[in-house]
Length: 229
Image (cartoon, rainbow, N blue to C red; front, side, top):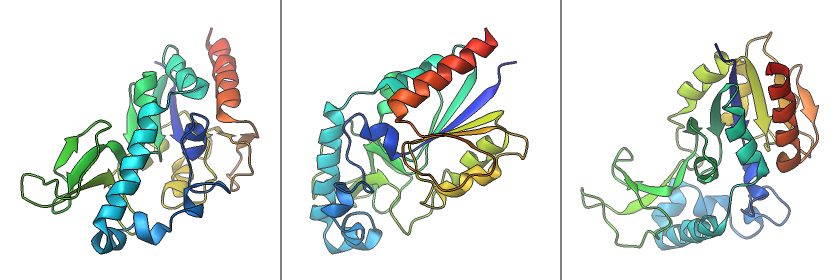
């Protein structure tokens, strides 16, 4: 039976494809307040502003391409069972070809009803306009988990981490909860590898590789596959 590698990815892996991040010194937080564009209250106050913010993100995503780290994770599927749990709302893992992806914070290429978030619509890279309605007649909103909202996929993600044979953490500072708490679900004997050029939060017994995702992930995957061969 193939070993199960669970991969937790964060903004760092997408940044190398040119997508802006919130935490970088020149990132999205420098130009937008979280309260304005990433909370239910912000959407209630100024839905047009919030829709425009995500329309711009969607247009940016349309022009981005998966990088070497995304493709290396696809390659890993030839020798291991791979499940990706991503904090990112982009579709770069899908476009690279990964088979099993859990989106913790929603998906930018989908819209949902502001009345019933379980009414979800694939919109690709099209904008959501003010006045765009769901079948219930309410305004469409981005299918994104905002600050202050529950994370529906968190329990499933925790179950996956708990059953992993190896946990790989890529491109995340592990400072944003509840997602950062997922590493605590890994069994005490389960190896954990962290690939990030910065200084991630301390993870029990982790092997930390301070490299960019596009450099560190392909090298790590090549080494792991060589052991199997």
